[in-house]
Length: 143
Ligand SMILES: [Zn+2]
Image (cartoon, rainbow, N blue to C red; front, side, top):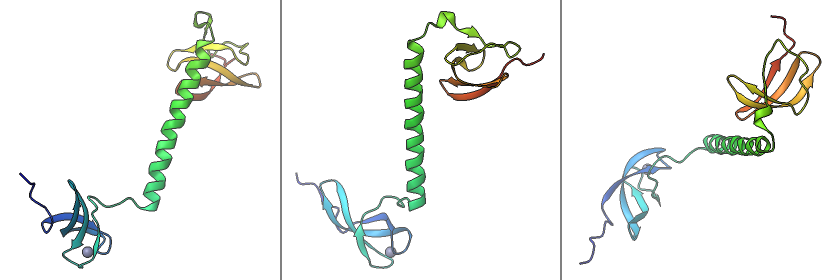
């Protein structure tokens, strides 16, 4: 049995001329997909749009969010790789009252987990790379 054609039926589509969702008439189909529609408000014929397309700023935002997610995943993967090269049994428990931290030391933080010392700033601050990102920690702190 031949499927009934939907051409000529009404469908809601976003109209780029009216800049809103409007009732449209289906003009052309390809298989199950609606290709072209005619707006019942402005009579313009255009591609069927099931929802409002993203604006340029929204597209840029979506791309940036996707890129940030990719960067975070890559950072976690590279952290896992670096950690795999180290002996976690030798990790030093982080204690802000103690000193003597050096670059590449492996530490264990009670909240952030394992961390690798990337930078030591003077006698009391260091930048430590954790799986969730880098943080500045203090040490030699009088308690
Ligand atoms: Zn329209």
